[in-house]
Length: 183
Length: 223
Image (cartoon, rainbow over all chains, first blue to last red; front, side, top):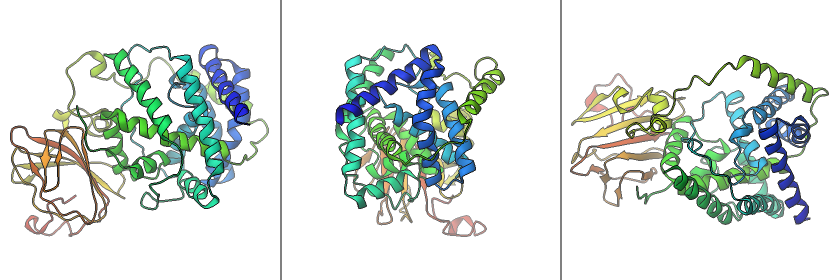
């Protein structure tokens, strides 16, 4: 089960890199089949009508194609990266608000990410999906409601009960390497 | 820069979930621009969002949606002529270091020289940045050694130090540090001697006084 999830996340990374490097339409179609209906469901749970969610999901997937060069497999899983695009689309299209983003770290010479580090982060991400599914129902529902935009910032609980420490440490190391390469 | 005061988990999760007012998002984005520790913590909260998306039940796309998306992609490619009009980052051009991090520069329309300051009295100056009205954010310039009068808070106030430092009864806040103050926080921040202090401060408190009252009756942080 966990191994299947590992295989899936690695395969999705390969697909998005094929989109990035070769503009591979078959790989994109596979990602579309997996993610577009989830993004649509995500946006409908965030309060969008079916028609709006359909339009926005297509728009999000077009952005996945257009911005594939920004995907960094040592810092995010494909699901995480697509979540951030879908979230921004929701803020923009549904809440009609603007979202300031941190300064990019993408400029400068791009170091080729270490394969072992990429794999480790992708496996951590797969395990996080697993951990979320295993949370007590009430706790899981609260996290889902937060990410569906159903809670205000004062209603959001501090404690997720999810193992975030390893992902954080790994990304911290990746950032250190990036800083080092940039200086 | 050695950062001692970081974002709370609650703020990071709310920013990741897209639940913060624009003014708070600007302060969080500014802190993350300066702090790799919080950038990594945010990435872990984004990973929670990825897990939630992965677990979200499918809703079938309309037939022909993939073809429609490919059409959208081709239309965008045709409309996209040449490089993006966004100006290159000054730091990327090897120019001198900027005072304001990129997210703040976008709201100011330039670096510190482009800020349109308004006097607040006592040599303190502020510039309110244009955001949605559910919370307000401003730049503050406090001369070295000058105290900010005692002020209570309604709701939450975030104060991100960009240059210089301030102290209050509890602690010191230097460049990169963020202070998270709640309703219960009563303090008298004083800019340290030596260098003027420049901060980015946001609050979700409602206006306490009518804007037509004389300035003397206004709370110090009138925005």
